[in-house]
Image 1 (cartoon, rainbow, N blue to C red):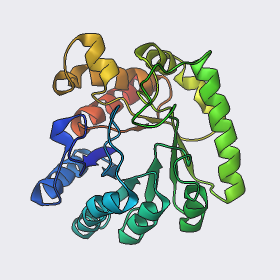
Image 2: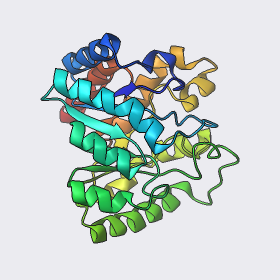
Image 3: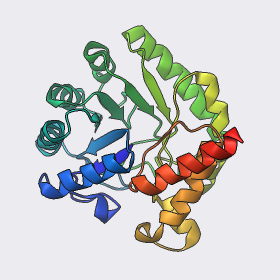
Image 4: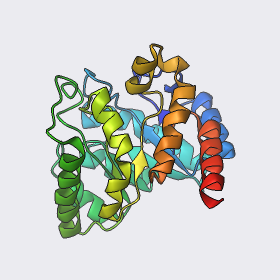
Length: 258
């Protein structure tokens, strides 16, 4: 899954795009490198970010989805939003997956909307909200608490009529570095949920803070954690750098088949 941000303040500057030829060029490059999905987001969710309204977010992402769907009609487009209205409009414009970092907690209409749209839904865990999530996140047992969270949310989704769900532990969303590494180590436990597992660690703070570097210099560290995640059961990698991620997937797959 290649990341395409049309937010002006996403934490990794090279991932930011206006809806122009740069966006289409990056999308084409990602698809040629092997991306199966393109994830379009207009909301910065870095710690302390300012939340856009649904109308503001739609103004950023709907033109992007429309342009990408027109240019690459066979590409699978994912809309990264926690607003049901934006999700509905994006699906009408060509998106086929909804990626919700809030797991339906910000907009109570999200689960019914996903059911009505009949598209896959990415269910992510976040402690708090984007503007508060990194203010002293605490867990007694982070893996167990996330498993309980997903079991509860999956039951609600099934009741609402949503059947196609992807699980995302939400690395960096209300978690310390210790929490993130613990989840990575215990990733295989989430297989008991019987849902595909998405890993979103690309260039995140856990990598560059541990290495004492920056997001711009975190590609090698990202590949290391991608490899660990793949070895521990990750099914989808959400990434800024598709070619390098595809190499990790290919090599890990060959190793596991040997």
